[in-house]
Length: 492
Image (cartoon, rainbow, N blue to C red; front, side, top):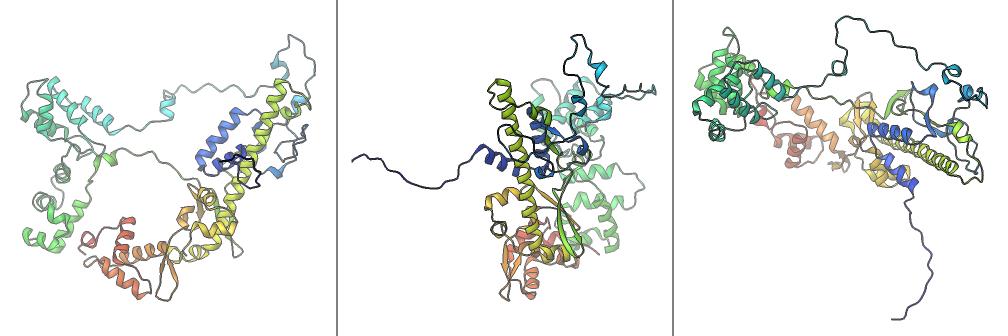
């Protein structure tokens, strides 16, 4: 095989550092973007937060302010504040050696007034309380319980065998077998300690199954509670029929009428099946919308959220120190950071523009959703928006992941507006999101005595011209967390 040299012309996309940074910032969520901006501010001395916009934060807009004079010929727009550094320019150029900065610069902040001696603890823990875990609550209550050393070790083993819902994962025999090598105890002693722990708050902890959990809670209710004895009877003897909503069987065996059984079920439904889960509040994570949608003068407008990122600019004082044709280490350091700052501002601005373009096209396509609700949602895929904004589908996917839109109908992730389509009898298309909304509406209006089966819902949708298979209805119902018809059956 003869070797030869050939020249070919071709085009290919090169992932430059600027492009990589723009793509990475585009796919970040709001919280991640704020962290990324904070890290950039700490790492790059030429980036700073605009002092006059620090309270009312906004997304960076490079064209909003004049560009920094660039000694190396870079004319890209970068934010800066012409008024920045006025006080620094008023300082004399040559200062005495023994000068004190306090004599020249005003104090940055006044001394804090002494805290009032009112006996209130003002440490970091008091101001930022940390939620206790369920195990911490159990151990705290155990410390208040009078037990022998042996019983306390048994109690610790029982607590270790309890999950986050307060359910005991091991039987008393297994707990006894795990302790028999360390101490000489009887199985009855483990049961006695377990019954003692089951008196802890909230009621229902350390239960081995749902039936025992409900029984513990009923046992701790006051003796005069209405329908208490009937509820204990239903839980102890008819738990299987209660789980399958076989009310006819319960009525026949308990000899209760429907009105009495309704009161009993109301008392049972007031109990907590997962007391450990509800006892420990979860850390709430609030969603910060990236864009706001509002209707003005009959038109739907999309506006960016001005509070998701601080308004950045380039430090004009540092930028003015850059000298042309100077290759010193300090000048090179400033020049490199100036270029990185401009790239970062440009990437943020590109992220903002892409997010607004994609959001505007989504709202333009899903205008009926804003007007009439989820039932009017149209089918939409990433390819449709990509063609409308002249971008690649992967870019649209990054711009809609973990990004949220505030609308008059609530806050939704941008991915929510994309859905597959189902053919209709008239040859049209119906969004899967609209079908879910119809299923939810039909279930909400059904007769609790005779709930709609999946097959019945399929027939009702076919009457509206929507051809959907029964298994598809079952899948959509599961995504809506709607139980099957036999579990939805209720007594009116």
